[in-house]
Length: 372
Image (cartoon, rainbow, N blue to C red; front, top):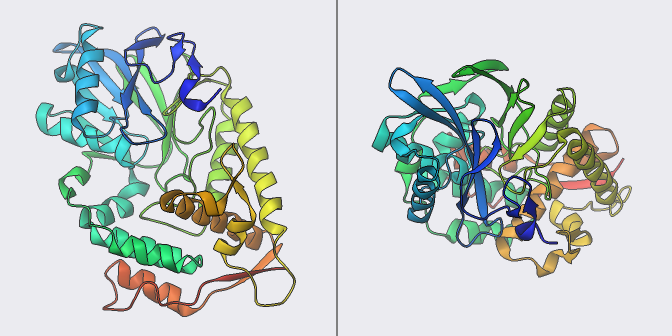
């Protein structure tokens, strides 16, 4: 069965079916549409609380700020006798558009508070500038050996939705408890998919609001965000171990069906990346000219359908190359591989982010990896 058709036990229907599906007392899962996206939907979770104005809601994640999503949210909330005006706060797991942008849009309409991890600040400020994101991503793609993709990235239209990327009202820093009515959610920093990703654990109710950190049927992208950094996979695997050390909670993911054991899925994800590290090492040789991340990605297969890298569309090919680079950097950190990277990469990133004038983000020599 494909991810899109996976049945969620709270609805007994394919997980992206619209509605407000009860996953626990006072908690509803609301899938919101992602048009033209293979993920189909993003789950936001409405947590019922009470305040001096009566009934209120805290939403974990906000959805994508498009008309279809706003309409679906309003319809779903109406089925539990609520509306967007009852939303007092958004706890956003990470800065990606399908999680963050509707929270910002609804804040303008309702005054709801938006909270986000402090680690997302760099990505958020770059995204607000539009062109800076394209230049940073082009520099990273060029470092990975994908010069043609980098040039295409630069040629793409700039993001003209700067208002989408307003700053949050509250930055979440460290691992901290958050009161949600009479509930306690433990905000746990889980960098990897993004630098400032958070999960929210409700130990008393046995629930883990996992965002994109732990997904039940797919693996989240690694190393592909405006604040692209070389240690993303090491961060991600460390964050998986961190969640594994929590009590085993019911997995409430951002994409896909509700699932029984967060621990079981964490174990699967760790095993997947260990296998992928071995596969990424295999094409490397000792000595010689070395291989770029794109070279290695082209030797691997992709998606659960084992597709050749050359068959992927441009966006997914870029995702694959950046994730391969993340695996290669872990091999370097483990002493299994070595890398040569020239100063052109650092200069290009500085220029793209606005700290240096004028240099071409695709002009640096690609990093090359060899077996140690």
